[in-house]
Length: 471
Image (cartoon, rainbow, N blue to C red; front, side, top):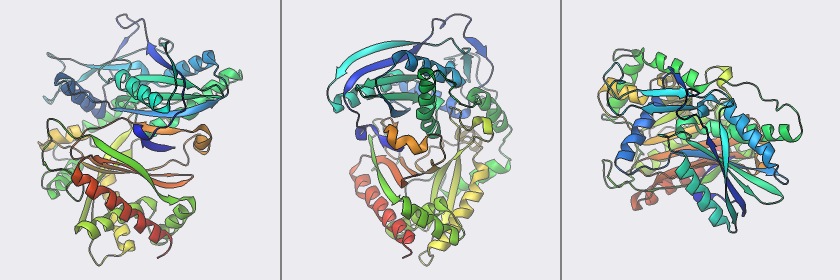
């Protein structure tokens, strides 16, 4: 499955339907007050969304997936599958609200905390909204984006929506979830789960899905652990040193990508795309070279990025943030939620250093940074007394072991992200699947960034392929 932007999505025309979750108990006791707190990620996301809404500048923040179910659609079976999926993941039945004023501020004097209420399983229904037959792929794409943008507001429940496009011989399913309730890995799980649930109804059998842990439960445990950090903790000291190394800021792309140094009131739209770094054979060869030199594929990819930054921009210290999954227990491995921490990475890269040496430094930087990933940025901002905004991020996922991964091509499955507006963010996602290794990316749609980022990525790709070829 490839992470792509909306403009790269291609879906055949067909009968288009939105399936909107609802409950008749929005103001009844069936919404059970829930003392489990939001995670720091969720709470920061809600505060950001509330501030944006107050300034009439809300932008979408959803993740989505599309995939095909073969054959004519059994609508009743799909409805049952959708409801089973909602019941399976408690975070979809849990709403978070922040008090506008009054009690509710956290004990450190920061922003008000979010209040949670949760529905028991079986309390959600679906309302179908038929949009008729859309006759052009561009119309399908525009309709999907419009519905996802409108129906995934993190400040409201539900912040997710389900869509279908019936083609006759198959049906494309689209599931969109605001980031409040899902990370990138979660999105990769959806096609398999809904397909299994659907086929189980059609074939009158059990779906064969293992029970999953609850993200609201995890969020409470994670938050309690984070709240034990203080300004003198080793983790916070490590972050302080990292931030001070960067002049008081988190890392940015190694070269300027916009004219202004501060966020503007009208941030730039981001552009992006996806390029293959290596096919499956080249990926195996690159992995072998990396292991022979004492590393692995991701440290090798980081080293290639660092060497390219040195070659193009004269950068002798490569700094970035690396997302780290926090699915620390087996029950959370297939759970929908925002299971992500950030690790600070900083490594030297000198003109005389070859690939093996830089990869060694990358591996050491990852080992140093990983223990710091349990500290949420919102908490660190308060403890360090300065705003911390991610600007340059390099992510890695090996998706070969995700359930259903070998059938993604058959299902025409894709993962999507919403449009983004930011003057400074450059985000790179290195993803390995059964077809090889690809690089998904986005950056500000500025003249400066367009002249800087794509050539940097192209040179990185050439370097990675040379290393894979043993050159």
